[in-house]
Length: 231
Image 1 (cartoon, rainbow, N blue to C red):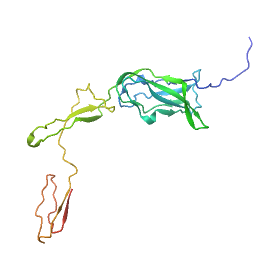
Image 2 (tube, rainbow, N blue to C red):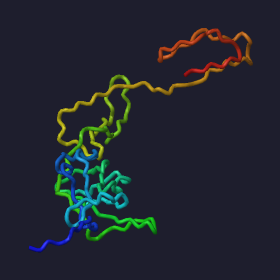
Image 3 (cartoon, helix red, strand yellow):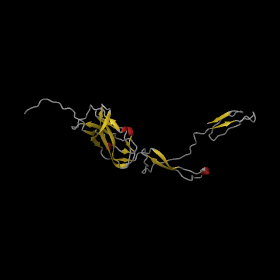
Image 4 (cartoon, rainbow, N blue to C red):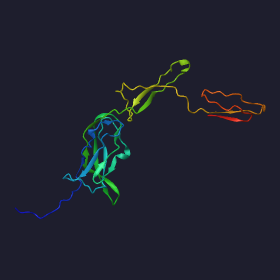
């Protein structure tokens, strides 16, 4: 046997991206309009699978590779993430539409200190496993048809209101047969006015009482020229 002299092996150039253990998108349910339950996290590796732990300048951009329902990937300012010691995390991703077999692509971006800019790689890419996006929980009530017509005297509206229960992605919860919506009349919170006593006719003008449907009472000893605020 002939033994070589001692030598060291250094981490190589960037060659691949890999998901870190337990941070694949498919490990959690993806709901429309909601942040991913499992935030994807990737490592920047050389060809031997060694993480470039000295890399805190490179970045990764994420986009939709397969989009079965024309969804939008957000949040828009969270699609580009800079590495920290060779690890890249995405903590605020969401898709707004339901669909089957979505797939994301993560693209490595090298950093140039001389130009202070990033260049996207055409070879160092990572595709996510395919996953579905399902309806999210009820988050908003949207008016589809506005009511109109008089209801005085207990009569029904000429046009009855139509409402839809939606998730954050504006998807109607077509599978929800359990949620109950209630409706009630709410008095206006902005009721105001002015009463001004005209003193040009007689100095003896006075207010004896003021009544209001708002169950509000006022001091009634007012005289000519006084102005009364009604709030």
